[in-house]
Image 1 (tube, rainbow, N blue to C red):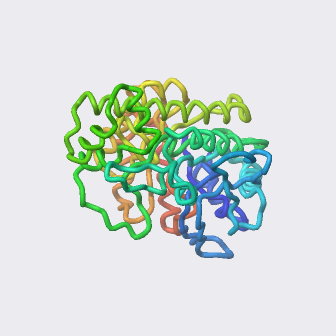
Image 2: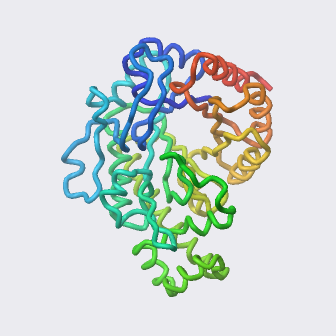
Length: 367
């Protein structure tokens, strides 16, 4: 399968979008929920940029679904359509395209600022407001409700779950000025959440939370402490994913679910580390493979060892060298990828649209 990612605003108001997409892919992975972004629309007839200022649900936000919740979804006030995702799905289906609902869960700066107590906090007491911590029941309730509302009363052909776990230190945005400041090990330790709910989980596991934090700050937590901390994170991730999947499957029974993930169990971010139980609960894994390097192929190789179909997530946007893409795709296929997801149908300018089409065509040709 070859899919291409897109936002609802790419589809709405552009009568040529569906035809362009269909020339390249058979499936559009369309954002039903998404974090804040400033997105280019280089081929849209009416605009050149969309300023999506906060994380939004691109469906009708029903009061009945959110009443009584601490954390509530927000509608996008930069779009006129009350159900942008639903309208875009209909447009794409009419053009003969399949549609996957792209659902982003714990990445929400608006809610992290409004309710800092449920955001990720590092061992120095510094909060990451863009990251909601799954250890909090309110976050798990929010994620499940968000996922269910995303696919309620709309015909989708699949679901793609991003940020279905904890985000960590690394966050691309807000004129980031942290590149190269830390080693990989320091990033791992500074991505351990030390919020009140995580501390309570450590205490239940027999750890002294203050000693755990001291070890993290010193950069030298004991191996048994690290194992307990990771197990606590994985329990919370499993609980989050279970609630989300239950909600999705109650509204879209039988629809295949793809999980954005990395084989490194410590990974945080849009593609969190796989827990031991994760692979058995979904239908496929989407693995980040943007760098055209052997490291991306190794991620695919490790993910394929789970036995699940592996979807390699590939970008064709600058600064990617177009000449490197064919070899990169061949390397990913050899590593075990059976599907590719191309980024991004709406962000790509004319020359990159050609690369999208060529990449999809090369993947679909018999080997």
